[in-house]
Length: 563
Ligand SMILES: [Zn+2]
Image 1 (cartoon, rainbow, N blue to C red):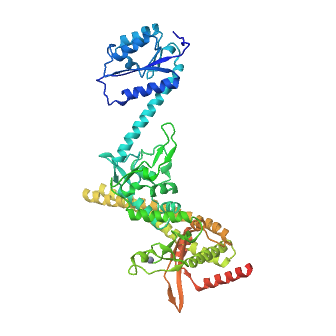
Image 2 (spheres, protein in one colour):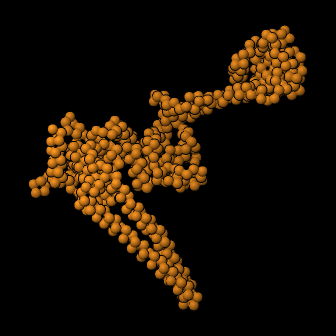
Image 3 (cartoon, rainbow, N blue to C red):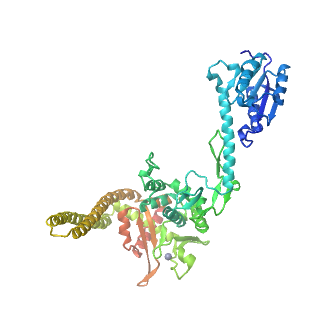
């Protein structure tokens, strides 16, 4: 009966729910069936001529009020199509159901569709490709339903303060007793605290990443991998264990989980079909406090975020380009930037907060630091470019002198270890001989053998370490050459900016002012990022009057030129 009626279809939507079917089973509820059928009929352009419902009636018999009424309307030609959600809605009884589908409906000129089973009597003998539209429709409907349901479940879990992430944030582990609860992982938590403290010191994301890399902290993936080698079996990322990235630092610093609360609903996808992420406004977030132990206290969090905001505001230029670089030479705290109307200046932040008992002010004007740094970079650049041969020689001598010393020491250690390992081989050999000749009791043999073997194992470990140290020193030697090349490009700079400073400088330690022969002196130690200069400048470097004179001379020359 593959004939489409000239006046189109008048569809009957047939809905049934039996008493014994779990009413909680949402997918079979009358509401759900009605929605599926209506959506489908509308989408296909079928006229809905009537809805027939048997609620709480078993599918094993056809003696149901709704069904009988529908048969009556079919007989009266009011209906020429029956749509059900799936075959079991029509009937649970196989023979009877089959009779309706294969004989009764066709004879009465009724097209029958069971959406869920992808059955359509019109396409009864067609290949399944023609079923695709229905197949798609049904799948989509289910996806939508599932997505709605998942969202609802997620929301209720969120309101209960349950952790629902796929993996706990770095610093936490999932509670083995409760998958929605987090426990602190003390080792990783220490790294998280360190990251927040660096942010409090004024370091930006990149500088923090570099700091962690320099300190050799394993990144979160490497950390997980060390505990569970299977976890990243298919990824290579953990193979650069100390490679921290600014983006992951950023994510970490903005994760409120560290405050001991669960914040959900910060993001959602547009729809079940469109995975585009939408960031939700803060007032729509679901926040549950005290759901687990905090790693960071609110004060630290606030301070870190305040500093990050400041960095963002004056990203490259301006007085705060030294943020995270200037430190108190005596207590190691950051120098705090202040601008009181007039001249901007820095002061030891520990002195600022805790007072005289802890440190002295270390007051220094912003332009003093600026000039010192600018001058020193230019001076070094000129040396590196070969314009100041004398300084270059002395810098190189200092650098290679230090490197050379370290290299020599490492080489010496290496040889000594080697010699002792060989010696132990002989000693152990003799011990076996003594034992064989009964010159030594078995107990004594065991004790001595254990002792020598332990010593040898320790030495072999050390051997590896020293070898690494040697390689490291050699690498630094070549880095030193690279740095010379890099800095030599800055012979003529007249201005500083944050990216230049971050590229070249590791930190600037400001000492307090002291009087020497009636002259105020202060030491500013500029530690360059490059190894050899760091070492050179850890030796006291005085920002002396001599430099100030130099600078004054340069400035007056510049003024003359400008005029
Ligand atoms: Zn201080």
